[in-house]
Length: 465
Image 1 (tube, rainbow, N blue to C red):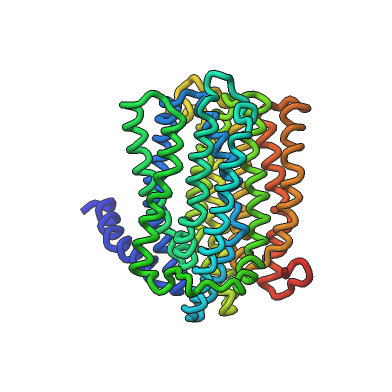
Image 2: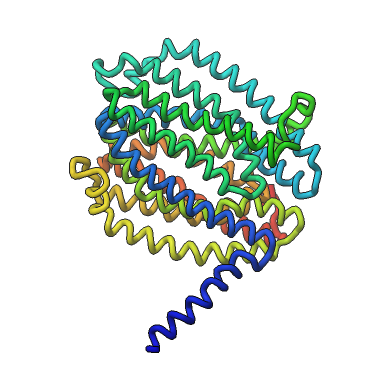
């Protein structure tokens, strides 16, 4: 037997044992996280593939201008998608804390109270939107021509209605993530994606390009999947936490919103920083240029998405480990994530180098995406990955007041900075993403410092709030 075959035979014996050991040895919290990361990578890989297929499919179905309108309107809706006054994140932390100490009744109270509050908010919000919608100048908001504006009000009603309903139905995913099982949430999302692409494919073969049908499919089908998932999990594995009017206790609102309110402000800031880009571009240059901007976003966002899959279990696991004062585990995880970060930064640089060829293969030659736009999106992803390590730890610990202040400042300067770079300095749509990169880079200054102070038990004042 040649040395090559001897080496291969040896590897065939060793590697399965090493893979098994990777998923079965170590701290119980780490094992659970690794299994979920592996499952999420597989599920998310399919989700990413479907997402890539959706872009040219929807683009061909609607055309570049209508696709830009769709992206801009959904960006506006995202603002409201986060307006749960932070209850989602508050529930995630409080549910995980109660479950980690075995207080199932308290966990059920948190769940029931969250559903009650969000249901009431959703009802008021949608009622008000129905009244206001008829007076909103959607053609002016989206900067569209007269021949395609007739259905915009109906489209807005459909999309906003489903997103309002999503406020409540997505709480099941909050509970699953708090239970350190993000792979299940990814599977739920994938189910919605598969159903959406199937229906849109049918539309392309049977119905002329329609923003209305796009709204029904894209916004409605994921909500349907969330409703079915809620029914399944609340009758199976999470039956003891099933929301009930009997367990609604508004005195727990302060616990949920106290922490959740800070998350809410951070969410609002993130939405303004990220979602206003499409509106700024649409207002300055028309909705057509939103398309190349978002294609570059989706391309580099793939890497950030995979990275988030890897680090997402850390948040909920940190809640448990910090409650048990297991600082050694937290330090160990951060060191591992820093090593993973170096690999992902290298991949981001490689993606930039081949971006032009990938764009051509993916969406064709008609859509022009500059090297500068790609470079700024690469920087955005790298900054986001660095921030992600410390944000997940600090969010799990719940010391987010400083983060809230910096995000608020970033939100205030983002829009004027975007307009300044885009128009005054004449950088075009590249200037819009440059402003976003600068705003996100502010967090690189204080997050590592706060983490070190907290983990060494030296955090005082604003660093410990």
